[in-house]
Image 1: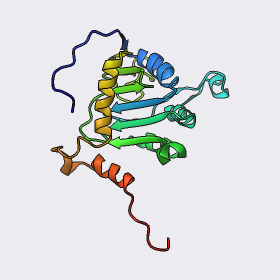
Image 2 (image 1 turned 60 degrees about the vertical axis):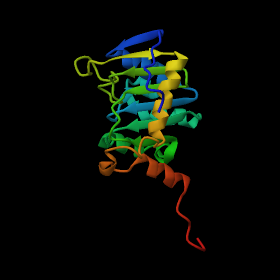
Image 3 (image 1 turned 180 degrees about the horizontal axis):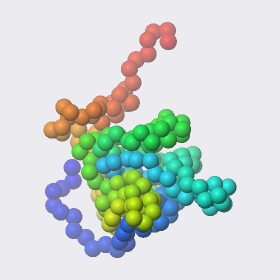
Image 4 (image 1 turned 90 degrees about the horizontal axis):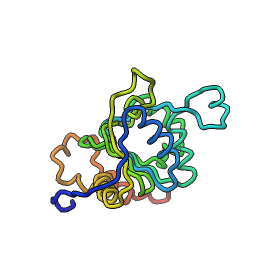
Length: 207
């Protein structure tokens, strides 16, 4: 853990309200990622967004899954991490199954019941902190009168980015698991999952 002394720093930030989460964070920042996207959210639900400009689907006014965008980003080498507190919704899980690259691990997912923070870190250069979960209603993808009332901020401050990403990585890598008081009710402590992937069981002789 970092020093308990509060981090106090004057920063430049852009405040987002409601639908701006969709236009500024989803359509611009996430879709434009080149290196990495780290997302922390309490809830994960399927999200439908406008099809990319220049596609037949866009010309017909169709909406596509956010997972289409993430799949394309993964294909171009963008690292994707998703830290969440509850099991994804059934529609999200069904859509994920239609994206084998993401399902096989290009979208690295970790479930921790204690996660309540809402964070999106993009390319180590842009950070969102706010109230919005990774859902259509939270990130403004739904229409007027249906989306949540949300507020958050975006900043490129490198110090705040480093601290926030270090906190995310500590949870994502299971370093907070050993002392967790909810370990007994956790579906699968992250540290055991990480260890299993690092030290896979030996293959049977002759396999």
